[in-house]
Length: 76
Image (cartoon, rainbow, N blue to C red; front, side, top):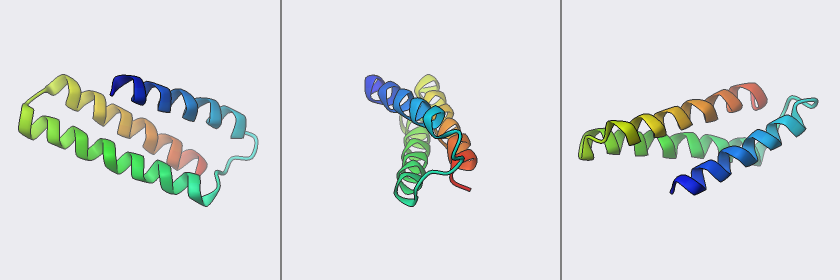
């Protein structure tokens, strides 16, 4: 799971850099980022409530925050 998250963040980072001049993503990309934010927030909540795994919950919450930053920068 960590590898998937890391790969996704790397891809989004490079995609963000390459799109920085345009400042906007297309609608489909923005929807996918938004879905990713919801997924990571749900995962953080699950790990916090069910497993009490603070480290994983924090990791998922941080990832959601990173996605939200990308969304606010390139989709709004």
